[in-house]
Length: 120
Image 1 (cartoon, rainbow, N blue to C red):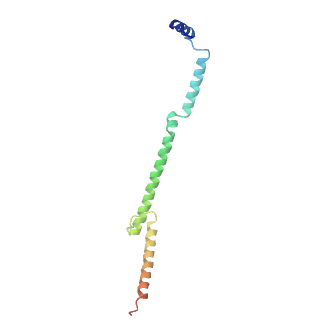
Image 2 (cartoon, one colour):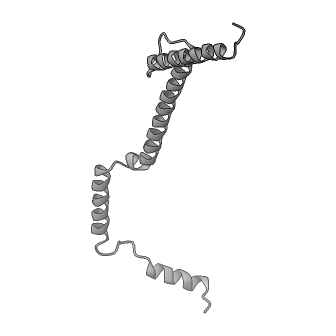
Image 3 (cartoon, rainbow, N blue to C red):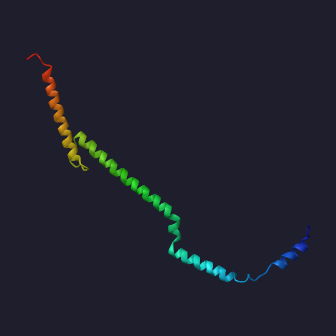
């Protein structure tokens, strides 16, 4: 079914109407007001960035956790090495434990020295 250009133009002119269909204005206004009310309750910037905010919160928590863990490790290392002036996270307990272990090892080494020595 072939049509020439004049017939196509005639069909298009008849099908085109400059006035909108009945009820279209009310439907559009109803949908627009519902969308405006929804956007007022839930701001679009918050909805679009909600996952970004959650991800940023997770990263901040991870950074804080790693910092706390690093500080605790540094305090333990300093306590074992012997620098215990400004340490936190139970460094005093670790220094006391280290001194106790050193005294036990010192007693054990002095007892071992006396056992094998028959020259006296």
